[in-house]
View 1: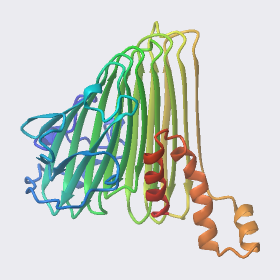
View 2: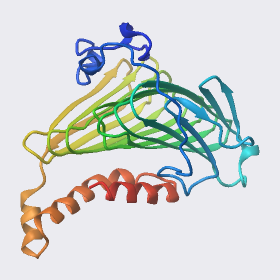
View 3: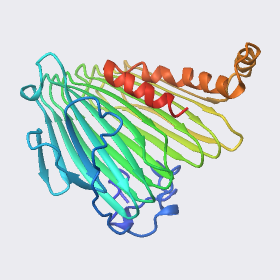
Length: 359
């Protein structure tokens, strides 16, 4: 199996095992040994997902089947593949970003695959509000191809709540042009087996990338946040902050790799992962990596895994706050730093409320 190849639910040979280094913490073959039967389309109805009050454009995949929402939307379709084009001419006003909601909804059993292409035009600004929702024991696999053209900016904000019995895989391949900006924040509650992966080709050339994430897991949930940023040119910046908390028998996985190729001098790359284990049987696996082939760079990574501060818990209980409430408040304070880095104010408030309701 090619390590960079995408998972294909129709090809059993593409299902990785723990022997594949990039998938050692997320064993697909443990749960999936044969190609699943196809999922049936269904009507989503009037539900609009977690970002329903933001933006006017929404595209929905129901069990992998694209449901055309508005004929005037800036999209094209090729089977189950969707192409979204963010351009100035499609914005409500030239001084505000184009906002697109993209939803992947699963239901029942069976398996499905979806793909979408997102292009942000030169010097344009797009806010992509992406959600994963569902119930049942389905298998979902999403492939995204994203291009941000010269001077463009993409704010990608993802909320993933796929259901406790689902197997969900998503991979976004992002290609950036000179002067582009990518701001990404992913929040997830996990599922039976879940992997949300981002791969970025970073050209340098004063491109700025921020890749943040939060996992808040309970029960037997599994969430894998994997990212690879490949700096291939000089003077690029990458900042990454991932935080997580696991309860019960949940398992959180973070794999972050930043590569600085020869000639990518002047790269400034920072990566941090910090997690709390709130139970005796919870598990966190973290693998931050820096691979540097260039001189004159500023690169650093940090990783911590621990428990809540017992002295802080004791202090709050002494002032009349029940133990469970004190733990929830401390956990919220720990995770909210990631949410505060979201620049779009309306999206930030939705994400904050979404997270607080799940702690």
